[in-house]
Length: 182
Image (cartoon, rainbow, N blue to C red):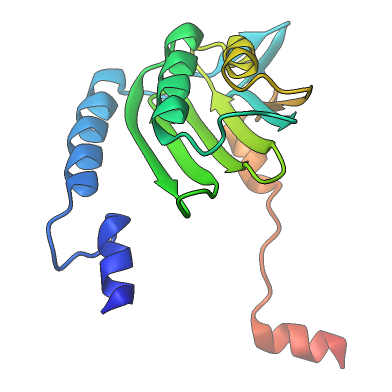
């Protein structure tokens, strides 16, 4: 029973109604119809799907405050010029960390906090016209960390889609792998 309830809370139980499923399906379908195609961007002369930031905050505060974290994610979305489809957060215990995601038309922002050690990990991906770099200033102001480390990666940079697909190696069936190892 607990497993079923956990799936329901995550919006994954198909036998019962879920507000998360209703929110996601309605907005996603509408946005997909409105946008209609994939939008690669150009940044510093490089054509890419978007910018992916890995942000680590050390010595941060207010990492167990669910309302504060949700407001911070909303501010990040707004200043970046993105469009939020859904924000879902989960607090692990009364004094524990928070994990969650802001699903965006342009990508996502995910967060996981460990208040007992003052650490928060953010994963931010945005394409189209959104600017994830400005969201870093929002999280600095919101969580007041002693140290911030940001790593940036341009996703699918300069490679046309057909080239990316051809670069993926084919998997050998398990039987062929066993024969090759013998």
